[in-house]
Length: 76
Image 1 (cartoon, rainbow, N blue to C red):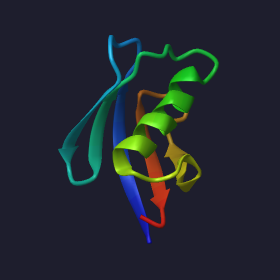
Image 2: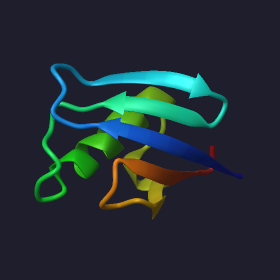
Image 3: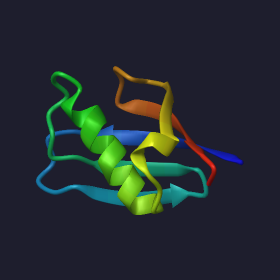
């Protein structure tokens, strides 16, 4: 079973933080800058920790270069 999440990313924040907006939407603050995919790699770590899944279960569907992203979590 797969679960799709819409994510709004706020890079260069003071702390990593996740806020659940509704059943399938998250707003995530990341300390990393959106340079050299640092924010995307940190996003995978933060989401995996928040959802208690492994990073390899998460894949980007849309928005790899945008603040508005869509991810899929496999076997959730």
